[in-house]
Each structure stands twice: as structure tokens, then as C-alpha cells.
Amino acid sequence: MTTLTEAPAPVEERAPDRKPRRNWTPWVLLLPGLLWLTVFFLIPILTSVSASVQTGDYDDGFKLTWHWANYRDAITDFGPQYYHSLVYSLLTTIVCLALAYPVAYFIAFKGGRWKTLLMALVIVPSFTSFLIRTIAWKTILADNGTVVHTLNSLHLLKITTALGWTVGNHVLASPAAVVCGMVYNFLPFTILPLYTSLEKIDPRLHEAGADLYCSAFTTWRRITLPLSMPGVIGGTLLTFIPAVGDYINAQLLGNPNTTVVGQRIEDLFLRQTNGYPVGSAMSVVMMVGTLVIVMTYIWRAGTEDLL
Amino acid sequence: MATQTIAAPASAGAPKERRKSPLAWAKQHVLLVVTFLVFVFMLLPNAVILWMSFNSPAGKFNYTWNKFSLDAWKNPCSNSTMCHSIGLSLEIGVVATIIATILGTMIAFAMVRHRFKARSGINALLFLPMAAPEVVMGATLAALFFNTIGPGGMGFWTITIAHVMFCISYVVVTVKSRLAGMDPTLERAAQDLYATPTQTFMKVTLPLVAPGIGAAALLAFAISIDDYIITVFTAGNSETFPMYIFGSVQRAYPAQIDVIGSLMLLGTMAVIAVSQVLNQMRAARKK
Image 1 (tube, rainbow over the protein chains, first blue to last red):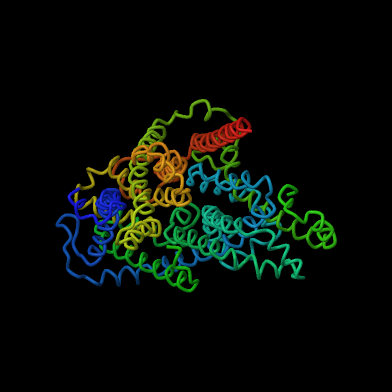
Image 2 (cartoon, rainbow over the protein chains, first blue to last red; image 1 turned 90 degrees about the vertical axis):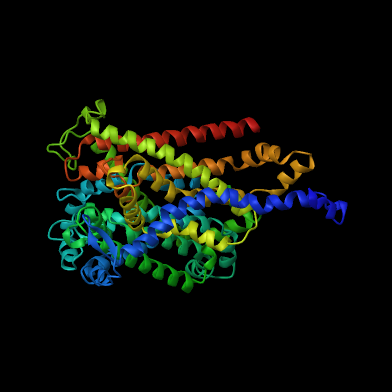
């Protein structure tokens, strides 16, 4: 209120009253949440970076010894796991995009009055625990189930086994089952952003394309696809990021030859004695790797505003 | 469809549609078939869960069909460990949702309504928990809790702390989009009509943002109740429902799990159906 005497014009009466509030209110609002994220997200991540160069054991405690060899162990000992994590998540992202695009396109442009219902059908399964739904694939892909019978009678199982996608006469406990489970789990994450960006496109643009003698495919390639790129990028990111870290599908639907990074990290942290520094090093490698891939992708796609 | 193309050139567009009809028809059907198959793919596990909940498994694992039985539906809690874990998951879900919704809504208001420095840094801090692999967040939190309170102290509160941590960002995103899409003139109108800031907030802003906050809370609850990876790292000796399911794959997988899975689905569908009917009734009353 003391500033009121210095106020140049009475018209600005509300300004001195507002100014101090504008300075402090946002910080009061931000502080509790940001503090929570700092203490329980940022600091642990930084602690684990430090833990990744420590040595020791649970009895004597761990000491910071700048033991960079932890990184050598974390990378060289688990080569196949990094390879599996990367290949499965990339494959999942591509298959999800290929399946999600037609579905999102159909709902957005042909859905009509069923749009809301169809989008609800995309989300509704997620309300059953994803673990139960993933385990249900054990029933669907079981050796005496319809899927295996069909593939066998079409002699497809021999081909997929020769390619290394399936193992023997089984679909379960194979790379194919792991990717199937991952695609199943992450498909809604691809469909939702795709649908949002497709839905915004004015359907009259399609008519305009047709009026200008574009084939349906050219209309899609020249008009729809460029306009839906934010959805494509958002959807692939929302699929790829959780897919890299996922180890549930590899654990439930895979075999000992399909292990991914997450399984090893969990093992090192929760079951191995003294696995804590190497496990931390693996976490750091994985986080940095994911970040580099995602940032390169965003940079190449040229949409920084996604962040 | 018909209602959508009403726009203007309905009469002019119709003959054109008919002229290239074979191609358009084929294209429409390819899309339809692909969409149908993907929906089968997405909904099949839920059908299987419902189907298997009526099974009387031959062995310990309810993976293959044996014979029809209502046993699992009659006593869903015959396994007390399972229902105990469901109770713990619900408690954690509710507490974590309340805390995360309050903290996240506050951040969303600050981000949309106020100008301040360090905005991009705060955005990054909010984005990172959504982008970091869950296993990394779990492992690093486990390390923090090991070093501070020790494995013995881990349980309900450490899980809840972790859940709040990864739910906040989702709450912020959801509430922010609702706030950003709000008409700012409404609040100005309230102030022009001599409403105090508190009155404006309680009578105008909050009712308008409420659906966003509600959606954010639902999302937070859904994420919390379904989380396995971060939970297993922070749980100590406690066991949540996802942890129980995961452990069952090694021990024994009773049909009761499928009953719970079916109940979750049917419950959600019932809630959605009721809210749809209520919405339509409200819309009809307005007319």
C-alpha cells in the first residue's frame, strides 16, 4: 500500500495491489509439487548416477570410488538385453503405427455417430489390469489354441520358426509373443494422439482433393498425412518410450532368450546381492540411450513444441 | 454419415460420390475390415478373461479351458491374500490420487495463469517423469529408500510417494489443457460485475475447470492402481494387486483373478453407460 503514494496515475489503481501477488502466487502454487518431483524423481536419478560409479556391498555399505568399470560391466555383460529392448520396442512402434493409423482414420472420418463409442472401445479394455490382459494372451496363444492350430495348418509356424520369431511348435515363450503382447499393450497410446490430430482435419479438404482429380491415395499422401504428422510423432513417442522400458511382456510371454534390460535391472536391484551399482549403471545407460533416441527423433521431425 | 455431410453441397456431392463408387466402396471396406480386426485384437483378451472366469481349472493355472463352473464368482475372496492386495491397491490409489490431483492442479494453475521465469526448466521437470523409463524411476527410488529409511520401512507410504510422483505430470497435462481452453472473458465478466477474486474463483473458474480436474483424478487413479514396475521397487514386503497377479504366474493362477478382471471391465462399462444416459437426459431437459 505504501507504493500507492508513488503511483503516478489514479487510473492504475489496481496495479499496485496486483503486482506483489503476481510475483509470489505462482511460486506458492508450484512449490509443493515441484518439491515432490525434485525429492522423489530428480534427486534419486542423480543419486543413481553417483551410485553407478560406487563399489562395495550391503554389509559394509557402498562408497563413491569412481569405479567406471561398472559401466563396462553394465554394457558388455548385457549386450543381448540392450539389443532385445531396442529391437522389440522399435518393432512394436512400427506395428502399432501401421495398425493404429487405419483405425484412427476410420473412426475420425467414417465413424459418424459411432465415434464416441468406438473411442470408448479403444480405452475401455485399459480399465482391466494390464497384467491380467497380458496373461490372457497365454490362453489365446496356447499350444492347443486356435491361433497355433491355424498357423500350423497354414504351415506358417514353420516359416516363423525358421525366421526365429517363434520357437518350435509354440507361439508362446517366443519373440513373436513378446512383440504381440507389447503391440497389444501400447496400441491405445498410438491410436489416441493419431485420432486427436486426424479428427481436427476438415473432411472438406478430402472433397477438395477429389475435386482437383487427386486419387484417394494421393489425397491421403498429400493432404491427410502431412496434417496428421503431429499425431504420428506423438503416437510413436507415446508408444516407444514406455516400450523401451517395458519388461512385463518379455517376462510373461517370453523365454530366457528374450530377456530385456528391465528384467536385468530388476534382478540386479531386488535379487542379486551387491548388484546395486551395476544396476544403477544400466539404468543410466538406458535413460541416456532413450533420451538420445527420442531427442534425435524429435529434432529430425522438427517439432520441439511437443515438449 | 449423412448428418456429417449436410454442410452445403450435399446435392452436388452426391452424384460425384456415386460416379467413383467402386473404388470408394472398396477403400471404405478395406478400412472397415482392418478396423474390425484391430478391434477384435484389442478386445479379445477381455473376452477371454470373462470366459475363463467361468472355468474350473484342471491344475493350478487357469490358462486352459476345462469345464464350466461358477465357483470363482461365488467366492471371489476365497484367497484372502488376493483380496488383501486389492484393498492395499485401492487405498494407495485413493491417497495417491488425492495428493497428486491437488499438487498437479496447483501447478497447472500456476503454469497457465502466471508469468514467471524458469518456465522451460519447470516444463522439463514435469515432462521427464512421463518420458523416463519406469524401471529407471523405480530402481532409482529404490536406491533412495534403501539408503534413507532402509528396506524395513518400505511399504504403503513409499509406494504412495512413488505413485504421487509419476501421477503429478499427468494431472498437470490434463488440467492445463482444460484451463487453456477456457474462455478468459467469463472471469473478466465476473470481475466486471464486482465479484471478489475468491468469488470469481469459486463460482466461475472452479466449476469450469472441474471436469478437467475430475478427468485428471480418474487418470491418476487408473495409472496408480495398475502400476507394477515402480511399485515392485518401492514395496518392501507389501503386496499390491498387480504384484499379486505377477507373483501368481509363478505360484498358481486362480480363476478368481479373471473374476476381478471381468468385474473391473463390467464396472467401468456400467459407469460409462450410466454417465452417457445421464448426459443425454440432461441434454434432453435443456431442449
